[in-house]
Length: 202
Ligand code: ATP
Ligand code: MG
Image 1 (cartoon, rainbow, N blue to C red):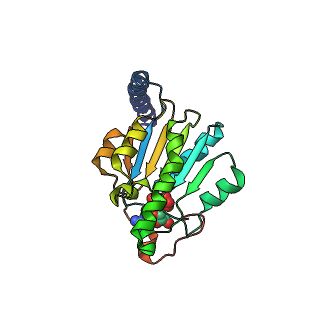
Image 2 (image 1 turned 30 degrees about the vertical axis):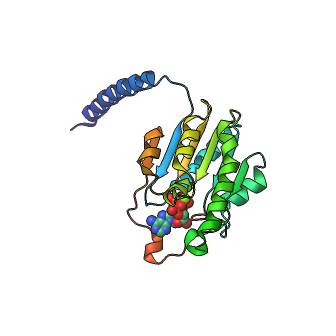
Image 3 (image 1 turned 90 degrees about the vertical axis):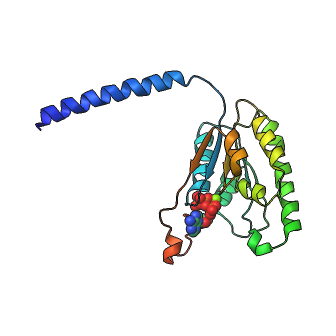
């Protein structure tokens, strides 16, 4: 095929595509915050959530972040937010991973404390974005009542977006979220014996 014909075909295909995209843009006319669930076994859930934190901060939006498990291990996002973004409300559960602590009652207490930190944000319209990192595990372990979590997300201010990360999450949570993305593991460096990397994995 000549270059001229290739170019003409490309132009026609792009025009068709543009008509479709424009129609979809016109159809999406509802203006409100979105609830996003990032789940699946692959790497990239929390990193994606913190990508949205950066986006929101770029526009001067008000952001709250809670991390439901982590703690022992310091993370780059925690260091950065604490040092450079004092306006971001940040809270970490701070008990370490459940398989480290093996103390269900202490974990549960910490989960409820963390939930009590984020709950007021979910009814405060001044927050544009609220991130609940690793929240799904609290539901899976039964550390937090699913109904209460779901109600709080559903009843949040109209302008507020929320991001929940973690594997699983359950169908009831998936049902009420506007966007659900599953990060699929194709391969992970760790499984090839490569150590978790500062600034990349934590
Ligand atoms: P990240 O924080 O890097 O975006 P994530 O939030 O998708 O990862 P988590 O299950 O929260 O995944 O795990 C956090 C840590 O575990 C990170 O250090 C990440 O690199 C690592 N990790 C994530 N997925 C896998 C996997 N499939 N195998 C091994 N390690 C993983
Ligand atoms: Mg994560």
